[in-house]
Length: 277
Image 1 (tube, helix red, strand yellow):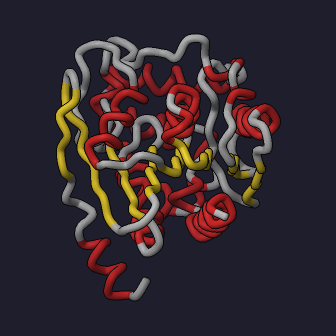
Image 2 (cartoon, rainbow, N blue to C red):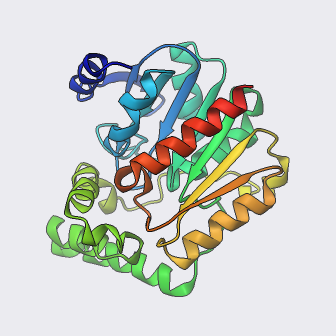
């Protein structure tokens, strides 16, 4: 892709389209042509976390990214809903029969659930710093996460401080541009921290006990500076999904697509190219 094309795509990233779904709407963007690649962001972030992938992949693929409800510009549901159902509606709206799913953190769990529910719609999975639904992180990591929600009563800045101080961003804290990108993405989703109920209908039985059912090419990517719980979850995915490959990126923490885009993009593009052969 030429520089002009990249600049034109980048300049259009802020303009999202809207799709009505039961109980609300999702805001999404598309670019490029060819096989579809759908990017699924992490919890309490938004589609901007894929800024360094969206234009880069659009030179070879039809790329899609959207704000998973209740994050970003998409609506906040008033009752629990199925995230894979929203993804299926978006694919059908766009006329996409089959897609490569690239999921970061929570978005990776969504990709796994979708692959279990709709295997014929998935060409491959790339799971970055992801945990399958049903995986339980260590007690100390759960306590740190609970501390973020405890900060809600103290206002937006307190939420952001607690979020950015979480050990999963340890390497990013030493890289101002990366931690600012994480903060910007999260500030657009602060309302989700104040929700009084869990907004998602869980897959039953959960994915953790069903990973052996997945039959699509799968790449698991994790940073060696992510938390022990997140690294353990990636190991589980790589070991239990048949034929899955594991790529560990040196020096990277949980902000893989934002802070280590060059390494992540090379791994993801190479994997998709191999999966297409």
